[in-house]
Amino acid sequence: MTVSIGMYEKSHAIIGDRLAKLGLDVKVHTFDKSSTFLVDGRRVAPAEMDLDYMWLQSAINIDNFQKGAFDLSLACRSIKVLQTFNAGLDHPFYKQLSAKGTRICNSSAQAVAISEYVFGQLLAVLQPIPEQRAMQARKEWKITPYREIAGQRWLIVGYGPIGQEVAKRAKAFGATTAVLRRSPAPHPYADSMGTLADLHARAAEADVVVLACPLNAATRGLAGPEFFTCVKKGAILVNIARGGLVDDAAMLAALDSGHLDTAILDVFHEEPLPADNPLWAHPKVRMTSHTSFAGSGVGGRWQVLFLDNIQRFVRGEPLVNEVRPSDLA
Image 1 (spheres, one colour):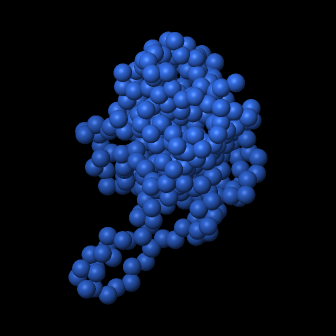
Image 2 (cartoon, rainbow, N blue to C red):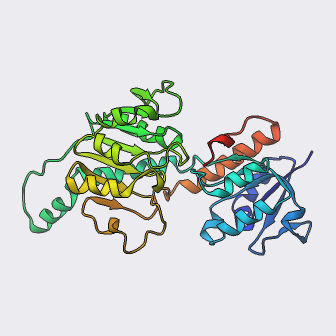
């Protein structure tokens, strides 16, 4: 039976040739900003579409068509599987689509890029690079001590592809890694495992806390006043997950008191972050505009993931990164 695939026209321009070379019995129906599908040369409304597989790739975001693509997907008569470019699925769209019976696969393509972002930002905190550059300009010869990652204790909250890539690199630097996730089953990159119930006890021991978990009812606000009271003095907080995990007022109080050394933030409660938000100007906050995923290799990994999963779907095999409906926010 021919498998029907829906995707944005620009996504098809990127992947079409490689998909065709797989020799699968598939038929692609592209959609554009008119919010209709092209089927056998005619435009068809989504309400008439029954799709086996829908691929949402980042081109919809680049073209400012994410909302349109989400609305179009919800308007389809049926979609058996949706594969998306998002790693976090806290947008209400995903829960709404899942409620219609659609299986949803998220993306692990960003994991390598985000883990490299974590270390780039962290090293910029630990090493006095601006001071060294200024000394170079002054032709000043002076020793500049810095803090090493080796020997640090890292706490990684959430252990999907992103958390695992962070832990892998932390181990390579010689840090000790503690991981919190739903199941405390052992993993090669984790020196110890626990669950969210252990958060405050583990935070009291950690030099670096990395938030890499989904935003859902169990995790919303997990870094709140009690967390910042328990966290080790001088610790560094890194949030590359979702802004809703953190109580900003409690975090700022911990930074102002000196209890928390630095907050490295790529995600926020409101995005874009309003110009009057105090995070912009706080001397102990290092922030970026939800850009940790924007590594040079992400696009290629998105494509590889799609090509792998569509072959699995055609063969009736388990899909990579399929998310349980109960885990959607």
